Length: 208
Image 1 (tube, rainbow, N blue to C red):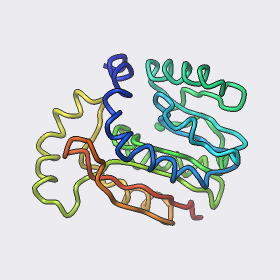
Image 2: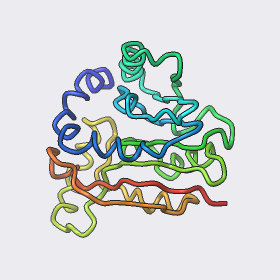
Image 3: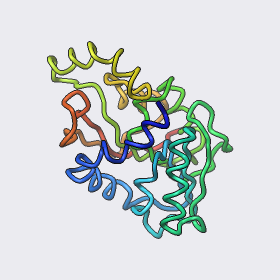
Image 4: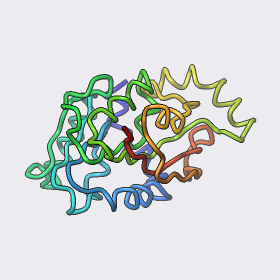
């Protein structure tokens, strides 16, 4: 399944990337600077969007087929001299406490086994006052009918989409894990299936 997902992921997401995701990513990454960790980097779609203010970029991807795609993108873009790859998982990131100024996380937290543990690991590797930049699809709060369909379809959806959950309350998990929300925006992901359209994006600050 991982090999299949890696092969088709970019093509599967192309419509939404062109309709909204690419622009959302660009805006979110504009303020990023210093030492940066991207978790769940996938095929590396964010690579060309990082600004020159980034002094170190580590792109972490635990899935081997996805990591192969990422390695190819790094080579094709000539980015191997300034960006590095890791196979680290959000279950237990292989980095010391307070290693990064920013962590970026986009369409990743839906599929981690333990959401609160994953966000806790992100907080751990950030410096005090460091920022989490996120873009995630979430439960359809305020849309009762859509939320019902998300709940009905989630068990089957998870089996065929790499453990992707449809009903995660990601904003609450971020806040519960020791972050303050600096900014957040809710919007529908265009050109996507209705059950994955509800999205949140923004920036949260590690508090101590």
